[in-house]
Length: 640
View 1 (cartoon, helix red, strand yellow):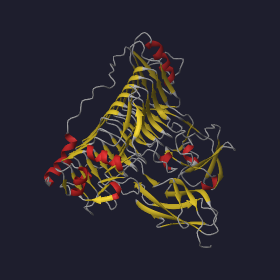
View 2: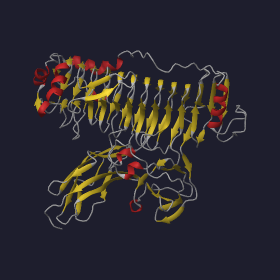
View 3: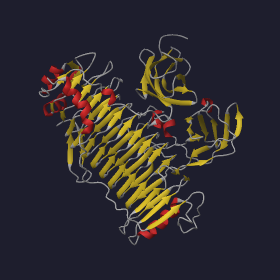
View 4: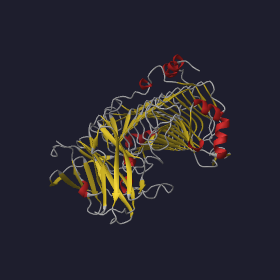
């Protein structure tokens, strides 16, 4: 049995493991001989682009840079401070071998925005104002494989900001309250009620109207540095800044925030580095990619993402802090992904040669890390996974090494709940290597588990759980190689939930698995909370989430578990709309700062059966969040 001192050594030392070597990433030489300048206020696109006579738009500078680059000459475009309300397209650059750098003169002051300023608002009534709406973004479409019964709010792309503060979109004019807006498509009008204390005669109001801020297509040797991408009215799976079919691209000290869906997207590209960047407060996903090779994410943040998806209780499918599909040869290191209303970090389908090192994944609604349908090899090391819906969700993935990590306070959310959870479809999953064409039939197998600390903190958590059974469970258990781990639950010693929902102690786990005999049971000597600590929020807000998108009644009753997390916003009041005649709803408490509230929906004998959308509202001052879900009404025996 290991000593408490050894447990403390893991907690204090794993953040000091030397950086792993990254063999392949962007490799760019910035020795440009031509400089072009952009100034949104002082420039003109008819200018030559010198520092004394700059361009007005970034696109004008990019067009000239691409023309110059055909002969191999490198170009650096310097963007002066300002808000550039345009969509920038970089296409077919780099064939001559030169480098194009698109760089803010001062980091964080050159903003490429998908929004326009709306002036001339008219007073309607009380605190409601209106403005003509001629953008016709209308509803987006969900991908064909996604659920077909998504709440309509998740398919909208409009955003309104008043003095930089985002408003919450509602789907009915009658739901307007301070801090919200409504788009009347038929009447071509937008209505809003500004935050308390807003002077509408001087308010600066922006509306997101363009789906993208920047695209890099079929290009190479491109650097994006110090830029801000915001307010893109992107549909599901769209991203504000998109790299497609390109190679040798560096994104450095960039920020994507307050976009309707994604922040940064990298697709069908290779030798990509994203570093010292952040993708926060986006409606869907922070960073995403598909069919990429040789990718490095280093020293990035992805925080508070998936607010749009959360409006429809859509926490899975394509959301979270980071999601990569079909990715080969990638490293994620020194990354923080927290308080996303979905997964913190997610690799989905045909991922191999992946290293995740020194990351902090904390307070995410679903798993801190989800590894799904991936053949590996994959390594997670020297990281902290904390206070999320689960620590790791291992869903039909093989050749996964998990070593020297901290798992703390994960689970207990009525979903897959464990520090480490193993699941997936019965009989495994078949996939093809998109690069080589090799066929794989994948099971949860060949996992190495060494030197980790697993520490529960709340009732209902498990250090390990699974629903695997039969051959799937046998293969997982017999191919596991484990040792030197520390396991602990302060409430129960039977914190391992193995096959057939059997709860066992550490010795029962060791006997069932035939490995992990050098591991110990006991509380870590040092508190794990320091390794899980997160920075204070820069923006006072809160989140409201539930466990499912649809609830069926039993004996005329359905109980919805609501989880409220306040990030500096204080007390959150709760209410509900959409209950049909004969159906009532009651909260276990009408308000909470952070915690769990039960919402009980009850149908009388007079209620009409069917599936109805119900919306729960959370309000704190002028901040409003909603979540819409379906209730399958089944009339009870009571009468009104």
